[in-house]
Length: 352
Ligand code: OGA
Ligand code: NI
Image (cartoon, rainbow, N blue to C red; front, side, top):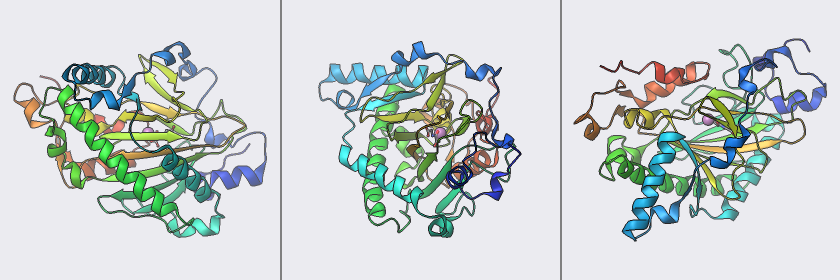
């Protein structure tokens, strides 16, 4: 199909539904048959780390220490894990998913008021990643809402705002708890990362990705390989697979355990840990039958806080990352074409 620029369409869902073609516009081709990116190591899927929060928070010192060690391994080797026994009620997760689907199903006229007006606008609906700047487009529609430190949210569909409020608060508490355990796993005081990132007034972004069925799923992507900008991202999905993470140079398909949350390490945690824990490269692949929805909550430092390696770490080692304000970093990352870890490349210092 001829080229279609994503800035000419307001939703890939609407485009795909009204178009009904069996081929996709060439402007959405981001994979080629020969691309080494198609190598997927399914045999590694079984070794994706699983972290049980109830063990991490155990009062038994031995159980706790063992769980912290496992957490440290998961962060250092994968930058990514599935979190079980996280305490977020299943019915709340289901309700957030249901309302997220309803939002994307609203007629386009109902969503126009939320049209994307730039990185720091509180509610943004759009398609692909950055239609104006990118060379290749991605087969997804998104809703992105800034839910912290101040909570914003669309007023429709009815009831969405209320469940999202509860969910994002619970995720924030969970992120706080995990950041304490991650600090411990780095040999730091448990509040170290929370303090040096001013986490309690941190930026939180609630993002819903909708990936409609794609007639040529082997040629396009829902999201390109990228890392997330914040400290920790929590992801849930509607039971349809598509997420892949890069591990040992290969793509590994993630088939999450039921009711778990997928947690990944973002760029800011890579910088705070002075590279001890790397943000994980991941991407969203497509299929030609089912609509996939994922809800990602990114938890970051306070926007105006300068972030770099934790001061406690720098007592013993040289900084490998520049300190820059989180909001400046976020802007750099969003202005790029999101591909790979191009944001982090801008703040890396030479080891020496
Ligand atoms: C994201 C993301 C992956 C997915 O929203 O940053 O990586 O599986 N999503 O939808
Ligand atoms: Ni991501």
